[in-house]
Length: 154
Image 1: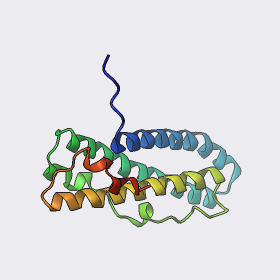
Image 2: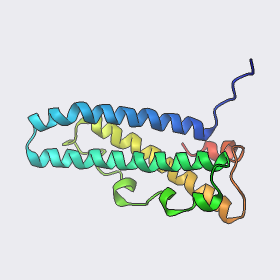
Image 3: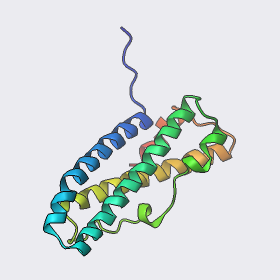
């Protein structure tokens, strides 16, 4: 039996993103109903807005990671990778860290806001690095994404 190939940065980040997405899904599924029973409508809307922000970040991250995996495996071209449907949007809702310190937001949601923001920020840095390589005429590969320059993105 061949030795297992060590996971690369993209695979590890993908696994982390899937786990966080599942955690967010479970959190929202459980807490949304409880919040509606416990809080007034304006507070529920405020909390719901932050649920949406976490979800939007994770959608952006997962879309980018799937496109990156497809690029690295040769399933899509660099031109396809840079198409708008795979682009990481730079919206205020995704980029901002607001809400992470808001005592009016449940602690569990504040934690998810912080973790999803950190993950989104890491992907933004990776995206900038990949686009710089593409603009220089280089096609990204797994080796490029596991070198010393990448280790510092966390």
